[in-house]
Structures are given as structure tokens and as C-alpha cells.
Amino acid sequence: MRRVVCPGSFDPVTNGHLDIIGRTSRLYDEVVVAVLINVEKRSLFTVDERIEMLQAVTKEYGNVRVEKFHGLLVDFCRQQGIPAIVKGLRAVSDFDYELQMAQLNYRMSGVETLFMSTNPEYSFLSSSRLKEIARYGGDVSGLVPDLVRQLLVERLRG
Ligand code: PNS
Image (cartoon, rainbow, N blue to C red; front, side, top):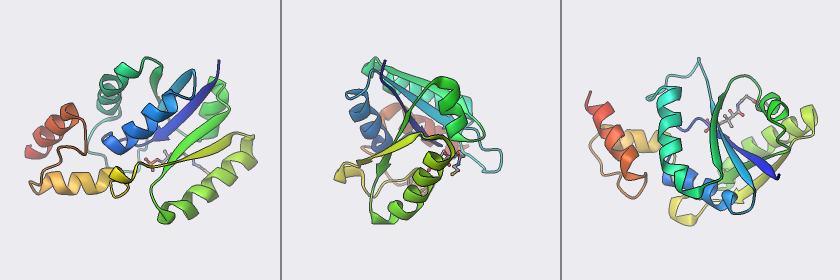
């Protein structure tokens, strides 16, 4: 079974994430979407809420499993028997950070990192920018699945 992990915070999942997850799901037998439990970072959605959203919007792919993890990603990979990580690259600005992480992860564990170029339609998109737009009443349709848009609007309306 060829298995790979797509890790992230997914607070919340965007169409940019989904594009990478969907394209990866066509290349591998199983894609494990791993949601980071980060107690130091304030998030809009709880880890369980993020997992529920991810499960709903990746159901149609048929070979995507959503899990949470804390600590090092490579330890999660070892526990799950996953030899590779897939990361989306939006622009050169992502590259320095991602390359450093990929090299450290490989050095620590031998787990490989594969970079997939983001669909240009979403190269400007991030969960942080998305939340900012939604918080000030901007229209985020087309940037997130409809279910996520509704939950975002509800959460930000208080
Ligand atoms: O969506 P994000 O916040 O950009 O995702 C970042 C993530 C979760 C992929 C990254 O922060 C991560 O792997 N964190 C786990 C800790 C870890 O393994 N760090 C790498 C040390 S080189």
C-alpha cells in the first residue's frame, strides 16, 4: 500500500489545501491528512472541528483518512508507517521554510518530502488571509468549500 501524509494546521481547510489533497489522492493508495495539535497557537476552530470539516470535504476522494498529531511529524510518520510527506508550494516565498523543514525531517528520519506546485488559482490563498477576509465581511466563496464558508461566517459572527 503506497501511503503518504499531507500535514497542516487546516484552520480551516481551504480550496488550496483540497486541490493538493485531491491531486495527491490520485497518485497514492492512501492519503493521511494529519492535523497538527498546536497548543501554542490560537486557532479559530478546535482540532476536532477541523477534522470534521476535512472528513466531510474529502469524503468524495475515497482514499483519504484524517488524523491528528502532536510533536514531530516524522514520529507520526514512523508510527503510521508513512514514508513520504506531500507539501504544496505556492510561491518562492514558501520555499526556504519548506526546504529547511524537508531537509531536517529527512535528516531525522529518512522520511522524504515531495513538493507539489499549487494550482495558480489558489497561489495567493492562506487560512490566515481567508480568516481576515471573512472577519471583515469579505466574500470567501470560491476560496473554501461551501460547508467551511458557512461555519466560518457563523464562528466569526459569534
Ligand atoms: O499548515 P501549517 O501550519 O503551515 O503546517 C505546518 C506543519 C504542521 C506541517 C508543521 O508545522 C509541522 O510539521 N509541525 C510539526 C512539528 C515538526 O515536526 N516540526 C518540524 C521540525 S523540522
